[in-house]
Every structure is written in C-alpha cells, then in structure tokens.
Figure 1 (spheres, rainbow, N blue to C red):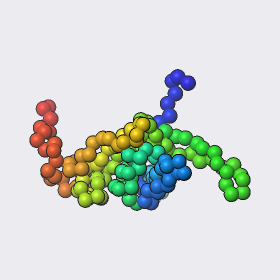
Figure 2 (spheres, one colour):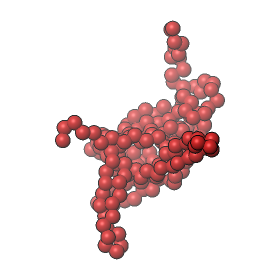
Figure 3 (spheres, rainbow, N blue to C red):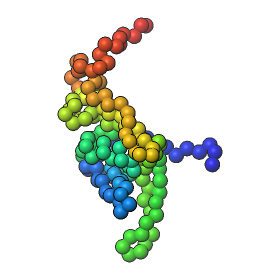
Figure 4 (cartoon, one colour):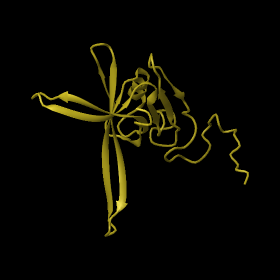
Length: 172
C-alpha cells in the first residue's frame, strides 16, 4: 500500500540483560525489554510517573553481537524499528498475540546512548555507538565513536575525541 509508514523510535533503558536465543536453522534472535517513562505533576502538585515496557526483537547477527558484548541491564538505548504482531499458541492451545518492535534488514537502528563499557564509562560521559542493521550477511556498521562527546552527564571537559580540533564557535 503506497503512502503508509510503520516506524517506531524509542529512547529508554533496558530492564534486563539482552536475551539471545538460537533457532534450529542456525539463526538467532536477541530480545530486549526497554522501559520508557513519563513524569508529570498532578493537580495536587504530586510527582507522578508512568513506565511503559516495550519488547524488541533483533534478527541481525551484527546487532546481536553488539547487544551481547555492550548492552546490560540499565543501558540507555535508542531503537528504531517496525511494529509487528505475531500469533502463537500457549501450552493450552489458546491463540495469543504479541506486538513487538522488530529490527530486521535495513529498517533497524540501535544506538547506545551511554557509551561502551571501558570506553568512557557505562553510565558517565563516554560517547555512544551507532549501528545500523545490515542486510544479507547481517554485518554491523556505523559510527564507533567511543571516545568523544558527553551524553548523559560527563565531566564537561575535553575527552580526547577525534573531533576536538573542530571549531565549535558559532559565528553569530
């Protein structure tokens, strides 16, 4: 159908370590549980919070390797994929439905927002890594910019990035 779009973008934290499973045909899937939170004050001025949990299924070997090696419970990630609903049967033979965000082919992106472990700190000021899902062989590609930037709290000083020599002054 022309003119339709199925795209989901999330920024959230992992609620558990990535779970990787293998299929009988040799393929693999990595499942992530991502939490997104919304905060507001109610009429009485009390702080309220609502957390939504999302299931993410990744079918690219390259991205699965990234998840296994670099993501842990609490990691902040940006996920871009498609919504997909699948039908399955439980042990009693009842039909069940699950809707999840799927990263497959060229339609998926995974960006680590709090850096690589050992490359500037899992929580602190290290830069992130950005991997786009490749097709065919499932190779991962993207920006391995672990050294620079400060996403989510850092020291604010120069971190020895390969981009330190760029002129950051705004001319107006």
